[in-house]
Image (cartoon, rainbow, N blue to C red; front, side, top):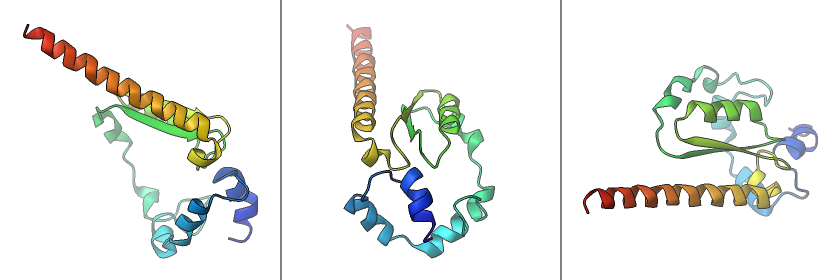
Length: 138
């Protein structure tokens, strides 16, 4: 763990220095027993129970508007996140160009501008659908 923070986490988990207090606070409450059970002891190879957990086939069942957010320096592969979004009927993906796994902190302007844009688009789609429904009965 001593080597992970300066050499891996600071590049791919949260790129801000120092980390925001809320990130430190959240990690201070991490239950390592549960994390290791799910993930395994290494960040580089999943050997825990999640190693055999695969829900890819269920992605097509998700019909609600969905935004997949990742980042260039994320621990999640941006190409995989884009593939995931392509499997959902009503989705889009955003890759924050300067962010990491904590892009909501280290690429805040981009992250939140895209999140707000998505929310507004969903709200407009709902409003358009309601107007269409109302016009059917005029």
